[in-house]
Length: 441
Image (cartoon, rainbow, N blue to C red; front, side):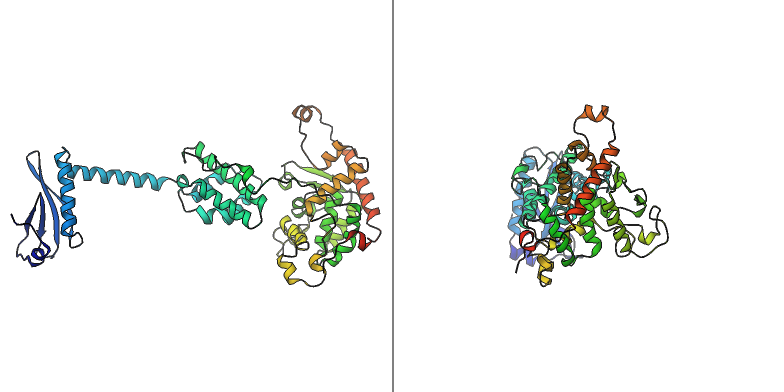
């Protein structure tokens, strides 16, 4: 039998469909109507002739067709049916594709985790969502969760560290670990890609914040804040945080209906509190005056300060449209921008405004004011357990938390009164610029 060659194949002509043999079970089938030429492997199995198409000429050349035919012949000689084997492999591939398509991507896993585990968060997982949408989902969101490797996790956190956000890198890593352990518990992934990564190695060693503003620095703020370019409501937020020990987020989310300036009480609802526990702050005369000054910055209204104002001025710190409150992060950033020469504000600002809030003790933020207020209370003779109540910290010891139910209302009111009187005293005198304020040329 004459073996086929490319020249022979090109010269083959036919008026009817026919099979031209090449040998070892390989045939070229010619179809006159379509003009196509198909490679066919023919074999006998159980006394019956069976055929398999293995390609179209010239997409599959002669030498490649022979290699494929020889492989099928070896398979046939081993006792297997090439047609049945091809069907089996196709079914395996189909099932594998089906299994792969049913396994979630990182984005899908994240949505499931938010819906099940994070729905109990006060913000419904909003803060976590922001972190993932910024750094995680753009990098690996489209990938299958089970395919994520250690290197991809470290690349994400290393990128966050590179932009100078060490703490955010640690937070994002912890969130990734929580999500993958959630997935592992549910059989979505076989292994946790964060398991072999040591959190201590992410972003360097944790540094405990202990910044407390000194009394000279507090006096300095009396002069520095008006020159900082901050709007007066934001300036007042600094003094309110000092006078009440509140968190800046609790202040930014507060409504006027939470305050009763007649009796001097600010009730922080549990949804505004970081630990989910409602809290009552007994306002000193100094603090009450601050809130009245803040109220004067908003449009006038006729309702009592103790009642709900109209919707446009419901918040102590309303957004521009008045439909939602200001965010505490906005206040924090405005304060931070005036202490950093590389900030966007520093590049735009002129004169001393860009460095107006730099203090001798180093950079400070709203949460440092809370620590400063607590420190002042203790220095003024307030018992530490009363200070802890003023901070709305949960009692650490379980038995004491269960059996000691005294609410310390009078003691807390006295503590805030003492703090307010002291702040009123130390802020009356003008600061001595050379001693407590740093000016950067």
